Image (tube, rainbow, N blue to C red; front, side, top):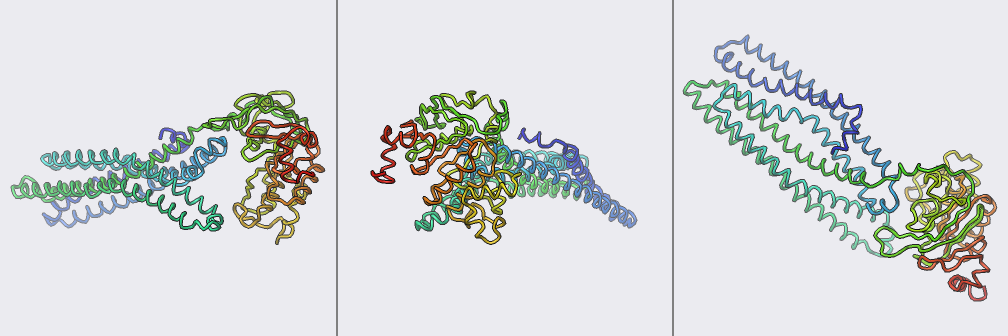
Length: 573
């Protein structure tokens, strides 16, 4: 919760003013029973109508003033809460954007979505209620106790015992429910994960007729959330009825004690009514407080969960460290590079060495799980080598800022990402300043013009989220066009043609060679034909280098490459 203080910058005046307005409203509320006492003991008892009307006017004035102060407090508290939550959401979103790939995967997408939505909303509600009740509730409770003492000192022990018992109950419930609310949020994360998986993989689920299985998994996650929510809510639900029982018991004592004192003449009827009103005020305020405590518990849990995300180291500060890398193609050298994923028992890549001159093309081929994508992530610095070093133009890569390295890299992932929006917007995502001619050239180089121009509206055609209205091959070509529109010195195609037919794949490679002459290119593929024309081909086998050379050289010297080629094209090839 301490981290929230920085998000209140520029809002302290409103944050202080809101509870002060509530404090002023509470002051008028405490004066109402005294007015009622005067009306009963002096106005009604003596038949003094002018006094009754006068006090009624005072009560009406108190009501109007209280309403005005309450509205001001409501406005300021809501303004502060929504502004803080907006700032928190923006900063958290930015922080998430700069998490490393490994950290983002370890936290989980569903958890991050829950932090940005449900958790921040709970924090916003908690801030709002805190500003409205932080001064009002204690002031009403203890103020009522003090005013009751001034009316009848004999009733003071009843008020004191009642408040002590209620506060003990509130803090006991708060202590018990806090860890339970953490479990509820964990179950919510799991339910969001199930929802995300089912919505994104609906076609696969139906294709394998696993609808009932997924329904059972979803129901299991929902039942877990239900049981934990009921468990935490059941304890929290004790607060309101317990508060009513304790306060009503105290009211009973006051009425009995007051009735006796009225009969003996030591207490007036107006004073008894005032005592009852003060106890009723305490009842209302403690009911509010009990609900506030529940909301605050949820807010604290959510704030801690958000803080856990902020505790994960962001790359934002380290990205800019180092000198700027110039635009254009650069030579790249790997010297005994090895990489191990966090928590893994073995290396994903081990002792990899090669040198690629500026403007050359490196083909990477190997079986599934051989480390091809891992090597691709090492090139622009998405991940850092565990052992060995990477050199750019003979200079250690860590001397250059990661931000400039990535800015000079165009990456086509093997998992196409399509954003909701027009075809042109998706292509310009790679380069917002691309000219119409650049967009058209990128589209043609990726062989995407064939399907884009055939659609209604052409470049204005709207893609759905995830490209659900595009085929797999169309998504891959759109992703490639996005990368080609980027003016970068390093182009990485991570199995970017797996969904393309041989003719389209060959045409794209020809156009890349023609239009990206002065670009260092890394092509990762499953087919030998996709890398056969590369200047160098690196063959990976279980994370290790099995061969390095041209296509013809590897057919003679690398048994792994020869087998891959024979399996795909036959021995005659």
